[in-house]
Image (cartoon, rainbow, N blue to C red; front, side, top):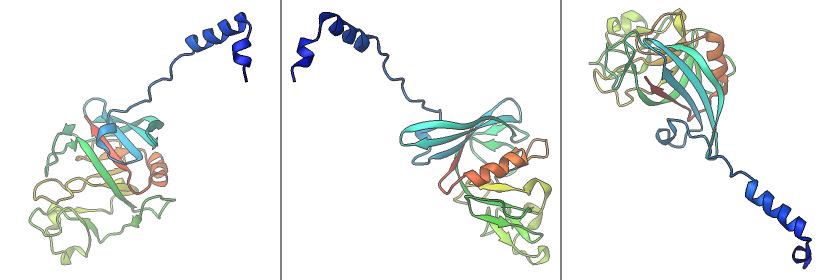
Length: 218
């Protein structure tokens, strides 16, 4: 038990050199959204890239360590760019952190970690600010809908081949914005959503789990 004390001088000097020269552990990577996402372990980080262009970085957290699962995914945002607070008709994508509540689409359900709803001609997103179901998914034949369909969005369109509902204006404040999704791109700016390649979106729908969020910074 006294071996360390009887090491030759050269060995002691070598051990000291190792202790002095071994670099300190690198500080863990801390992404820009880290203090804003609570306990979320999966984050889609949307960063403005000029005008209506953006890039999506996908992050996973294990304990206190964040790792990038994918970076630099091309995306489109609102034709008016970004806005700090969502509002109806702004055509801009709101900055902030939002839940990713469920997936939906006109296509049959892909492998999905989120609840998935296949939609048809009677699926709407209520955009009528005076409606008690404002900013929610509703099912009704157009002539029988209790809200103004002219101010709402029928979900059976090509851009919603696959989509994920974003929790923007979850308090449903009248005029505070409705129908914000991550959806299939048609190659053009959106009305305030985030759009990307459909194949990549399908992979994200399969990877995401309840509790995931989207963090947006224009």
